[in-house]
Length: 238
Image 1: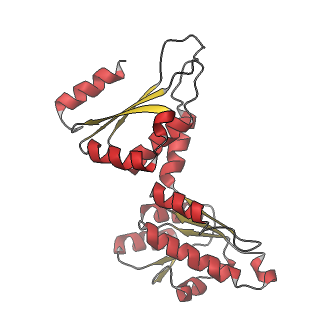
Image 2: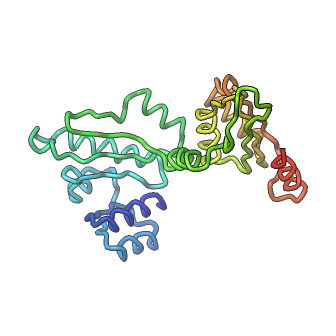
Image 3: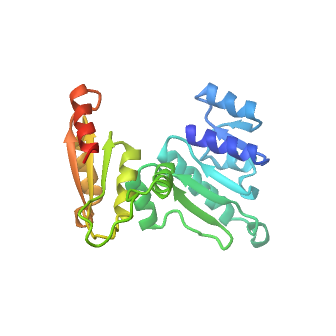
């Protein structure tokens, strides 16, 4: 997938030896990492036989980063089992196991149930999301309160999200977490999406306490329509 391919290319650029385990269903993606210098094993990444063949237990890093969250979790759990079964001396060189889980609810459930934890003395395992990490970096580099706000400042911070997929949700959550401003006014968010009603229901079920820290208005409009774009432009002037 795109996340795994990017990680592979970054590791190759960093002079690491990279072995990719992939089912081989996307021939172009496989050829892409081969051309970059990776070795490829065609097979199920969650199958212990292929993990052993790839040298997973003695690798420096192991990333499970396909486009399928459940497949990534399965591969990550199998890798931790392999490492946990190693003799103590060999386990000291165990890889860091990083599992990409895009679904925030699934990621939270993993954390809650401690299914992906440091189960061996020298093993570090964790779930991550490029969407959450990207949202955090975006708001670090471009803070929403660009100008200083004093206690008596009448202004408020507003964020407008056009489209509300996984990335939009990550930005909204991170913006709410960072929304502590000098005048104590709450963050205001406007979400414009053609499926806003359904998106709002899912979002509020995932984050039932969100309204305690920020205000979010979901607007059910098609972002491609000129009238919608005019409305967005008007919101940006506030």
